[in-house]
Length: 144
Image (cartoon, rainbow, N blue to C red; front, top):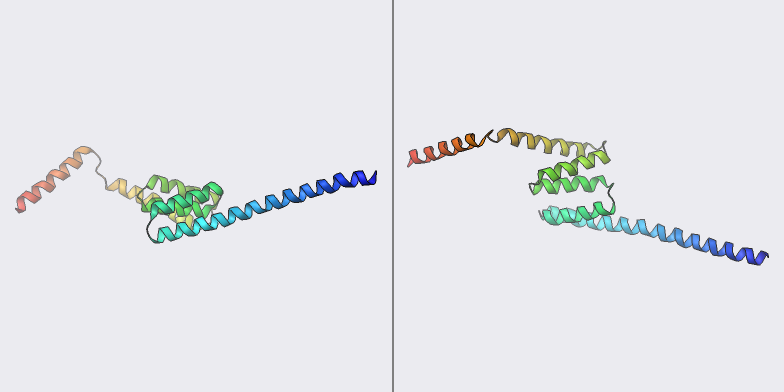
């Protein structure tokens, strides 16, 4: 009877070992993939290939949604593309994931301030914009 009991125990131990090794390899593969995507995205950003950088950082976030640095970097890329709403969301998420990181908080704050400044610079109504255009036309006609 000992031989019969040992066989299933050995088999169960083997299955547990295989499961452990299989689950152990998966995070390592994800980590390598994240590093590869991140490195490629950084190189793309350095070349100002912002759409490519966005694509790569989005892939990183699909693999690891808790990766604060990827969210922050994605915000930088969105901001460079003029997509400020998306940049704000990415910076916000980075600060939520790592509120102690002063760079993430700085980028989030800076982007929000830039948006507020741009709103203040815009004419309040369409009538103001038309008046500004008319003033510009009068100035250019007067100089001719």
